Length: 280
Image (tube, rainbow, N blue to C red):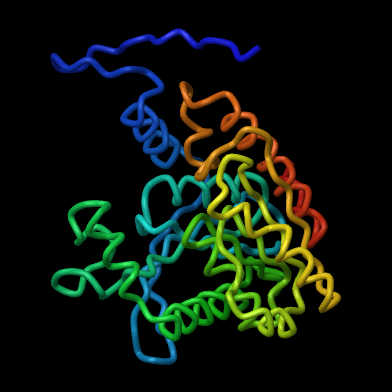
């Protein structure tokens, strides 16, 4: 039986904010970012086309070079939640880079923040060309490989729209260590699977037929090409469960799926190279 969660309220400046509401969840992410002991910085990464991609970079507290992960945002653009994911990856012992793929595409050549709303950012996302996205990601991967804190091992992960871009990038770049696809679409062209060399790990919600309905066919196609594709479908979870599962009053199935997916993800990352131990 699914348990009920009591709804508490917090009074702030005459406003009533439900703890566990989307607003409270956003405040929780901001607090994580503001109080994180890990080193955060913004970097500008130049691509082969001359674009400047603004990216959020987080370093773990470790004593030797470790693997790195490029974190590809949803169709909302680079949000605090995605930056929070990068911080959680660094907490687990990995260098994490979350690029704003809307860089220089918004009003006054701004990025995600310049669009003014998530709906406007979504419209901007779907105006991006595949060639530009791939060039941006190439530059991000190379930037990480040049860092002294990285042991040259770079994986790519993404959520929703970013999950689809992750799968596409595995087709484009055979040298990445792994692709972690969170409820993203697979390439439409089955011939593309032949180019993949990295293992692809999928994370899907049971109640997300638009995406999860593709999994069985993709698994068959990848097996036919002798490529590693390891999808897991989480019982009762919907689309976007990694985000909604962080909300204290999120659906129990989403919360459970999010926790299980994080543990699985960290376990898979350890296979790339165990994170270094903390000094002292």
